[in-house]
Image 1 (cartoon, rainbow, N blue to C red):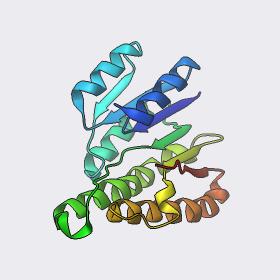
Image 2: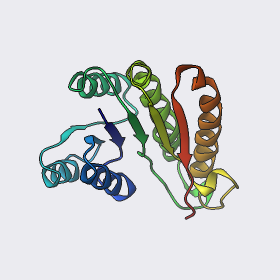
Image 3: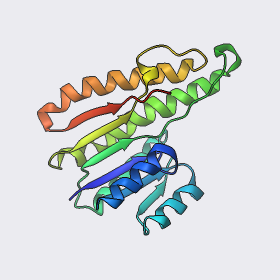
Image 4: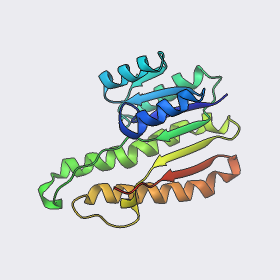
Length: 179
């Protein structure tokens, strides 16, 4: 069974991905912190499974994954970690709390989702994780310092996990679009 669970699904690349996979017959799960936009997209796609989720909340992450996977025989074919935030500005003009929030969502949220998804991915033939990276993970980007740092971390995590999870038959890759 082809299932995809998408974080950051309510807008942008996440929403476009949901529409594409849904049109190709996949069972789509939508996760996002934006409840209104999430509900609109779920209705547009015929009432697909969705849940409001802050990827920075480990308990909520585990609960959402368990609920989605339970509806599909405990399996998850594709996890798309698309949730992320960006803040433009000079490093010193952005509060430390905002820098921490970028790292919390872009790195720790992705890490929590992937860790919690492991048993469902492992139980699924041809399972895969796709992480939303960025060209800013290839070179430091002025005015996007914390975002760039977070995408460097995503790139490193993705590369290492692709090698490590080969033994489980789980592929791990990333997308690195330019700005």
